[in-house]
Length: 148
Length: 83
Image 1 (cartoon, one colour):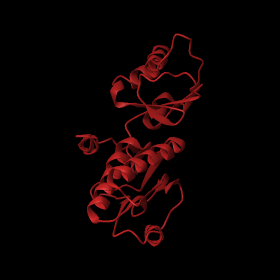
Image 2 (cartoon, chains in turn purple, brown):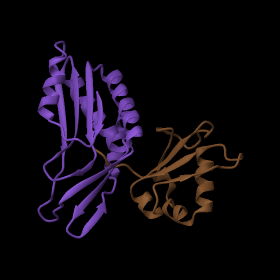
Image 3 (spheres, helix red, strand yellow):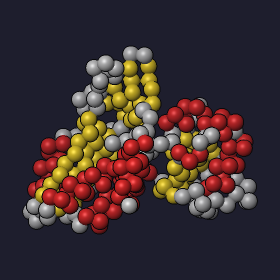
Image 4 (tube, one colour):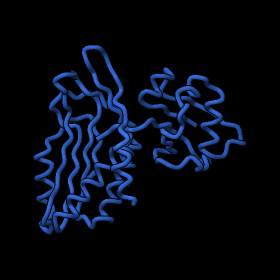
């Protein structure tokens, strides 16, 4: 499943639903990304811009690649956009596999590709105004390790 | 065809898109970007480090040497910060 939406979602309910659909799975890994505010440099919100058509296409391609590469039974990506406040869930990745290593590796792979290839852009809202979050070089490095 | 701009690129240009009709000698996405930059100083400045941008045709990320034949929607994508 690929879901790109402004709407909040319940990570626990999503995980339970995916798990219940696959009795052949022996391992499930879930990752949830959250809006955080640093105590020394607080933000009031995170605003995510998104190119929705491209996001759906790229996330589907990344998911297909992970399914094939790690022999996953299923994988799902849920990603929100719009204005989110600290503590809210931004996104979630889930992988189901016969055994744990494939589930862990598949989830890492999905996250590493999603960070650099999914068209979302974060802006932090602070008391002083808005500022764009800069892409991190280590995100590119994390993705590139999969092609070595 | 339409060209879409996102995030800080959109802000620096003060618009989210352009409707363009490139001349017939523009064959690839790289040609198109060079042509767009030559006609727009703000875009030229914003893209002074062109390697950081990804490009898409009809909502699929593709390499810069991809031909634009058949393209209806092109996007210039600053480094992404999702997840």
